[in-house]
Length: 378
Ligand SMILES: *Cc1c(COP(=O)(O)O)cnc(C)c1O
Image 1 (spheres, rainbow, N blue to C red):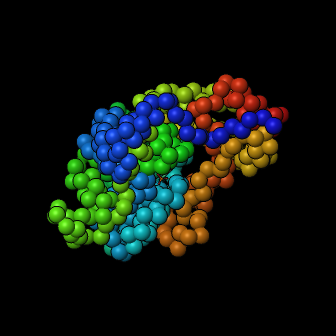
Image 2: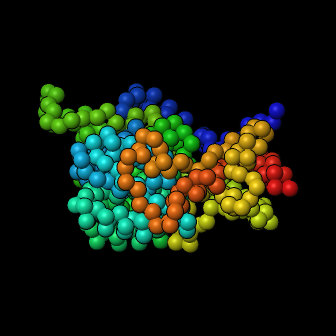
Image 3: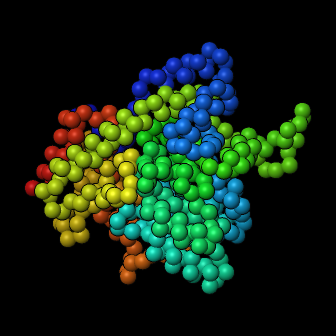
């Protein structure tokens, strides 16, 4: 059997261990220490965000972002429907009500027209949202100018779920730093990883300071343990932050390789009529986290067929995220689309597939994948 090719797996550079060793040697094996503070500082330097708070996961960062914007029991929150459940689960943690917004074909991200429709409906029903969570899917930025204009008109803050888009540049600005609050994830399959972890960033220091307070059990500044608010144990450990510091030094390298992978697929499949690569919008320079494609509607080969054929060759791939409005757990909530029938996200889910985008892949690995796919369409 050929060696397994992964969708996206951790890719260490070697520096990680030095930072972790430093933590051991200084005995800062705890959810605080030099690596945690430095990792936050270095993320700020990279993204140009004013402040950051390192947390245990991207999910916890979204949770504290919602809390920061005052989202509570019975409040409404708009969110991209085409995403991983981690984007929207924290809305439920806060007892709030999600409203799902469809994608557009141009970017696969939140459709500004569907967003506008949702706002108009909310206004009529006196259900205006406390926040909008915009996802930058697979490393491509959403159309932020259009989305922000709409949100500004309704005075609604944006949380950017940039879990998949660390390093993506939208019109000269890093994704995650455009909205009121942004979040990154360092889970095992993200563009850089700490094994598990997340970060909140903002240009408003009050949000990250409050997140730090909540993430460390809301301890008041007293000699004894005094609590006036509900707390959480969400702070990133100093060991994990050490891995992150090492990883951050090779983020640009990882982005170049991801871009190379995407372009290799694109060039290799240009003669196959049935295949369309995920479009890249000219307003952004993506981090190309995952290379994705769709199969044309009239093709007699389906995305699942490709998934099965690749698996037989020991190559990992996976379907596009199943939209949240189609998930049994979330089916009771409202959904807005600009499509006449069905939805863009459902169509992308049915016809789409994520191809291996592991930065450790060799040219031979890429050839193996491409040849397997080409054979299917012969
Ligand atoms: C990975 C991911 C998250 C969650 O991050 P964790 O660090 O795994 O909690 C949130 N949103 C999106 C879009 C993701 O891909």
